[in-house]
Image (cartoon, rainbow, N blue to C red; front, side, top):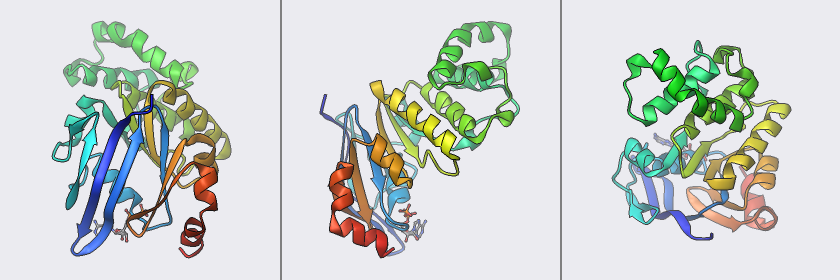
Amino acid sequence: MNDVILAAENLTKEFKGFVAVDGVNLKIRRGQIHALIGPNGAGKTTCFNLLTKFLRPTKGTITYAGKDITSLEPADIARLGLVRSFQISAVFPHLTAAENVRIALQRKRGASFDFWRSQKVVSEYDDAAHSLLDEVGLSEFAATEASELSYGRKRALEIATTLALDPEMLLLDEPMAGMAQADIERISALIKRISANRTILMVEHNLSVVASLSNTITVLARGKVLAEGDYAIVSKDPRVVEAYIGS
Ligand code: ADP
């Protein structure tokens, strides 16, 4: 399917007169891995925060699955299926991997947080928690405390807690930040796997990851879209080369 799931039109954010995101038009197609790249200060994080509703745009509209979501809150869009993946800080360090996923599943159902450890809840969510851990390659770490997992595995656990919300589209903020090569390969494979039935938009600095994973890349520079297309196209674009060299 090639229809647009998330669209931004004339997206603009000013901070006290400084235009960090300047009239950006974006179309993310269903089923794609779409990357947002650009040199430091290009406006990627601001754009990401606008799309995930952590910031309000000065101008412009955002549409998700045909609905205008410009004035919605992050929790509202999560209910619509558009979920932002948080950093590792979202994982409870002293709970096991399975417990972390169980809590996320329970939250999705709106169950009370207090009873997460009751035997009834454990058995109710156990199968679902284990299948999510399996999906992110952590089945053998189900009983391991999150704090004991490697950085990359913590990130995989955090992705599992995000998947517990059953998103149709995932927004990933620098999924490879701070990772060693082995973890990069593991998380790349995971992103590829979860993209089989979900749309993904990621901000990512690691260009070889972007090249190997993305179907479409939007390059931002100074708050504007500089180029868009697949890696072969954008990486040869002289404006993109100049923006990176000049940064
Ligand atoms: P990137 O993620 O591409 O490095 P950012 O979106 O973080 O870029 O920042 C884009 C520009 O907006 C930068 O010049 C930055 O200093 C500025 N900026 C970002 N957030 C704020 C803010 N809260 N107040 C003022 N300026 C900001």
